[in-house]
Amino acid sequence: MRIKKENSVEVIAKISAVKAAIEKQKSSGKSIGFVPTMGFLHEGHLSLVRESLRRTGYTVVSIFVNPTQFGPKEDLQEYPRNLEKDMAFLEELGVDLVFIPDTLEMYPEGFKTYVEVTDLQDNFEGRSRPGHFRGVCTVVLKFFEIINPDVAYFGQKDAQQSVIIKKMVGDLNLDVEIQVLPTVREKDGLALSSRNVYLTKDQRKAASILVNCLRKAKNMVEAGEKDPYVITKEMTRMIGRQTLADLDYIAIVDVGNFEPLDKIKKEALIAVAVYFGKVRLIDNMIVQSKE
Ligand code: PAF
Picture (cartoon, rainbow, N blue to C red):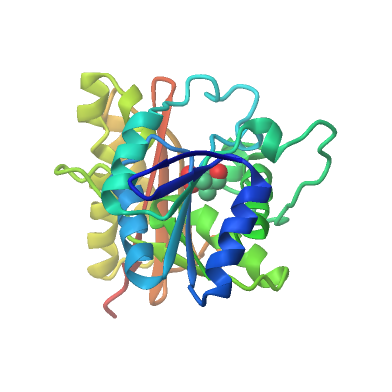
């Protein structure tokens, strides 16, 4: 069922109609780019959409606040939404199709099948948000099945998510290229996130501690520091000095597989998660040792 057609952006709510629309494009030889989102779009999402528009012949964006990736104590109901603004952004960019299913369309009564990338889903984000990656993988696999994209775009801000999705794609022999694009930041370096709107003025100011401690870590690695313990200690000290910030975790891991490192050799990914009251923010940087 097509619910709207405006300025040539097709807006579809039903899976069967999305499949038909995409089939038509594929048979005319167009490559399909896909940007999955939970809406409340910001420049981070838009950078993915622009890249898809540049590289592929037909760009699909999904807007779906996926209930299965929220834990029982998480902010599903309060998750920010602004469909009108999202549509204005997407129309202006010239997206071809926006898929906006409702919960029952994606998870009909009696839904029982979930996808898990074992082990990788249990550390760091997975430990703080049990069940989160199972929900992400399940919905992303469903989207891949429905949309059948040639390329799908994700943001580096959710680094563990990208690693897990790449692993799922490899393990299940899915025929989709995963592109991970750089984090988009505010002037003070804070990574763009839909959750930033929850921050009070003081918390917003304090939130630059995430990027600041990552920059410090990057400088330490570039100056020759190879011991994750020393870097973690310094980052913990910096975050501890910020009274509004509560450290959740610091991860110093292999860029490709998110395994914790004993020693930094050439390259590492440093990730951090910090609470400001109830708001939990994440960020990360890939660092290169110069020696
Ligand atoms: O990164 C997100 O916004 C979500 O986890 C995703 C990939 C859209 C799945 O719901």
